[in-house]
Length: 69
Image (tube, rainbow, N blue to C red; front, side):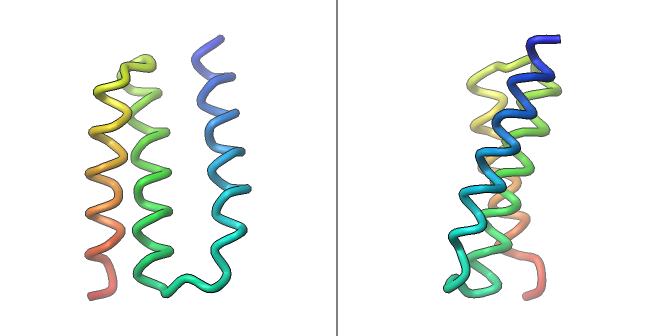
């Protein structure tokens, strides 16, 4: 239960933070979204492991950066 609450809170904070990205390029926006989604997803999958969360954010950011190339 606590893990779901944490993941939801992180997702809300990330979405609010991304709303301030109006002047970003599409590539920058995709990178930020990929990092956020990757971080949240891997946090849930690894039960809040810091290494897993950071790794997921990095992989998600790279994937987001490379989409639409």
